[in-house]
Image (cartoon, rainbow, N blue to C red; front, side, top):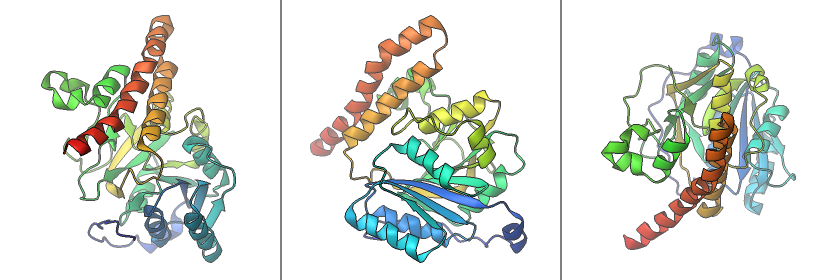
Length: 312
């Protein structure tokens, strides 16, 4: 795995044969762009899962070696459907292309630097069946040391708590702790629970639910499209669920893309999200006025990471 450590949680029994034969078909959708060494391991784990009927890979742009590896996968395994040559159209458009390409009844969206753990897909598929529509079930996203990752389960994301979170004031200042939107330090539930927002690193939706909400909003290029999708599901009266037993290890920051560029897109996405959610003239004006502040706060983060690294 090219030196990347990816611990595996204790193995659980494989799904029963009844479940394998009676279940709806599953397509995993993965959008790839300059992922780096994690891609090979992530793809191997997808194809090793007995519930994966189809693996749709949308290549928004890869190195020569990565492209060759993906073509090899498609040639060796008939479950792999590879789409490439369209350029870097962004995550939301790429994911929607993957959903349109996929033939499965249930769509599992997975980041290319995320490693499925035993029974992750089985737990997602079992949980979503029978749920009122529309529904999203997100997995428990872990760091490589198996601690829960920031962003896997979150509260309602507002302009105020986003700024408090980006600046880290909510996590470091007791008086502003109420603005903390991340819940990874909360007690892990023993079953799936409703939350306002889950991570786009690993989640599933029934095809009919994904179509009902018109998929991802393609005006987002990178980041926040998952937040927007959760909000629209809830606006339609649906449910967003965090599933503690559907585990995935997400490395994060593996892309060869500049962190500054990534955080810029995150800031632009957040600013757009707040403008989109604004109700009435007053909220709209505030959202527009604060847009540069949100983008600026996001851009400052990688600069601070670099400064702290050098200072350390």
